[in-house]
Each structure stands twice: as structure tokens, then as C-alpha cells.
Length: 577
Image 1 (cartoon, rainbow, N blue to C red):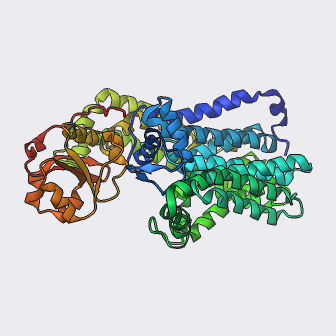
Image 2: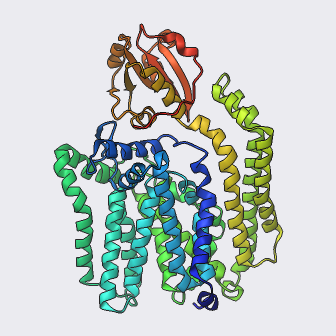
Image 3: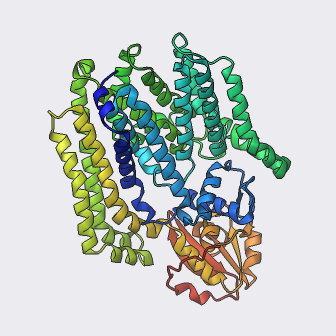
């Protein structure tokens, strides 16, 4: 395709790069300053990165002072590096932002010569504004980094298939396998299985027109093995048989065959993909139909993108453990497909054009409704929260935060994307490109108002920092701190600044520590209620605080000062280690 060819020669790339970065900044930067790390994954992963630095062990990740076998170390290496550079608790979220930025810029730069400058910009912006990526752009977890490495692997692998020169193709295949190796160091075998299956399927479908690589794959596999084994062999040596068995069998084969966590039915993703790819789920089916109709004449990148989108959803449907973040690496493909379709001429779209107009209107209506709901949340939250959580201190704090001035500012900021959505709903004659740009603007412009006003209000409930600060106050006198039950390791290590907090696994251990006046025990109220009577719980409780969907409780051993149960929590800053 040569659409946009003239612009491509005259428009400098750096302006487009700045535009993509600006869109990402509007989506991802405000929340860095308006919320803490939210339970459970963000503080846990950040704690692993910090313990890597504190313990000086960069081979085997640790959590609560013990081997952390859930994930490989790549994300923790990067977050730990930023922690050492002084970027604080946001280090993991900055890794995520950098990974998303890299993915979007790669998508733009790769698509520009193939579907035009406008198509490249749309592909990056559409990927960013899919609800799934919009959510994970602001969260310090592993999946955006995996998405970056998968995108590099797929683009280099695709280029190797298309390359007719032996030496450049060889280098491209090596780069592809290295990227898959880095993905494997980020999140295990999915780092090579997802891009590998997509490229394998693409090679089979396009075997007549693609250069399959031959011996280049042997060199690529050697490069992949070198990347992975450079960490895995020292980790196996240092971790011993139990660590090896857990990380190789339980965490990988066990998750695939019989998941011990996040188990969901086969149709899990089939029912949820419209939500994940909202608002572009309205346009994506049209892009899919157009791609199938023009399968042979369309750029080979479109065939790759169809497989890139479909294969991960199908693959993860067969895996017993399923979560929304698993399919984050497929989001750029949705951006490419929608951008390619939008750039098609009306004649090429044919009868799809009538459906497109209606579906764009439906997308704008849905975005407008969601924006109105956000505005309503700003108005009702100060009055609603105290009723939902009667007597909770944070209800008063939220009401004090959402002052009339802040409420008015939030409503004004959210009125802008609402106006854009209403324009898109009734602009039947606007071009597809203008409607797409308006839909992108409506989604992006809704983010700052949400992050600056609603997110700080929610942070008081979602963050464990306040509870951790209160625990630190009580433990400052030298009393022994314990965790009762699993699920809390890392979260309260982070906010109390402790590498190691012993865990109590049984009721007998809990009762034994409660008999010691030097003991402090952290858990959630439901877990304590199963082990203690209401009177025992009331006598020992010194702090109680809502954190997310849990009510966290700090108990003091009998003989400790339980009279401080009425103490108002102070938002003390936890001192860094």
C-alpha cells in the first residue's frame, strides 16, 4: 500500500514520536503522583525487586526473605535498577510505562512504511486506548514488559520471513530468538510460546511466499538458549533441587495442565474479549471481515496481525489458569488491524461502511455513558463512601479530599471527553479517520480527570500504606511482628520496611503468639474470625483498616496495649531501608 507515501517523505518521524509519547503521558503519568502501589501484585513485585537489591542476590528473586519461585527475574532486575537509581516505589510502574512506550513506538515505526503514516499513528493510539492496555499501562506488573519483547520478536520474525537476503535474514532471526529469550526471563515459557506459535502459524499459512529461515533457526535457538541458560543454570545451582523442581514443573507444566490458581473455563476469553478491547471491539470485527476478504492482496503484516490476535486467545483458552493480563501481548495486533481497516477507502470497505457508521456511533455512546458514570462517581462518592463503610476513618478523608473546588475541576475535565463522544455520536458524515481520532481523544482525555480526582479518593481504600505505617508504629518498640496465613507476603514487607516477617500457618501457632505480650500479628479479619472468638479478637485488636476488599487487622499479644484500638491512623511515611 502507498497511502500516506507523500506525507511519509515530508513529515519527520520525531513529531509523530512526540505525539505518541504525549498520548501515553496523558494516560500513564498522572497516577504516578496520585496513588500508591495497590494490592496485591504491585507491592509484592516491588518488594521482590527491593529484596533483590537489599540482599544482593540477583540470581534468585526473594520474597519475605525466601526464594520467590513464581516468576523469573527480568522485571525485578529492571525495577531494582530503578530503585537503586532513586525512583522509589514507582520503579516497577516506570518499567511498565517504558515497556508500553517501546511497544507503541515499535508499532508506529513498523506500520508506517506498510500502512502509511496515519495508519502507523492510529495503530499505536488504538492499541493504547484498548481498555486492557489502558488498565495495565498504569500498573507495575510483568505483562507490559512481556508484550514489548513479544512485539520485538514478532516484528523481527516477520521481517525475517519477508527478507530475501541471507545475512540480514540470519540477523533478524537471531534478534527474534533473543527477544523470545528475554520474554522467557520475564514470565517463563509464554515468552517464547506465544510469539513462537504466532510465527509458526504465519510460516505455515504463508509457506509459499515466506523465507522460512532454515539453518538460521538453529543459530537463533542457540542464542535463545544462551540468554535463558545464562540465568537458569546459576539459579538451579544456587537454588537446589526443590527450587529447580518448583520453577520448572509446578510453575510451568503445572499451570498449563492443572492450574492451582486462577482456574477458569475454556470459554473465559471468548466472553471477555469485547470488554478487553473496548471501545475498539466495535470496529475489530469489521477489520477481521475485511482482512479475510482481502487476505491475498493485503500487506502480509495484516495476515500476521490476524494470527497475532487469534493465536494467543486460543492458546490461553486451552491453559487451565486464565487471567485478563495473560492476553496483553495480543493488544498491538488489534491496533494494527483496526488502523489498517480505518485507512481503507470507502470503495474497499463496500457494504461494511454502513455497519461501520453504526458501530462507531455505538462506541461513542458507550464512551459517553462511561464518562457520565465517572462524573456521577465524583458527585456521589463523598456521600456514598461513609454509608458503605460506616465509622471508617477513610470515609471522612475521602469526603474532605473531594472538596467542591476539586469536584468542579473533575467535572470540567470530564466534560471534554463527554463533548467529544457526543460529537462522534452525531457526526454521521465525518470520515473514518476523524471518527477514530475522536474516539482516541475521548478515551485519552478521560484519563487525567479520573487519575487526578477519583484515583486519589480510591487510593485511601486500595492502598496498604496507611495500615503498614500503623503497624510500623506499634512494632517500633522492638516487638516481634508475624503474618498469619498466606497471601500477605511482600505487601506488608514493603510498607513496614522489613525483609523478613515470619509467617504463622496454623491456629495453634497463632494462639501461642497471642499468649506472648511481645507479639504483633497481621492478617485479615475473616481469617482471624475463623480462629478466635469475638471476645478474643476484640481484646487483642489494636488496628483495623480497610485495604481493598479486605479488612486488615493488627493483633497484639495478650498483655500488650489493646487500649490503642481506638487510635486514629496516621499517614506516616515508611522510612526506606
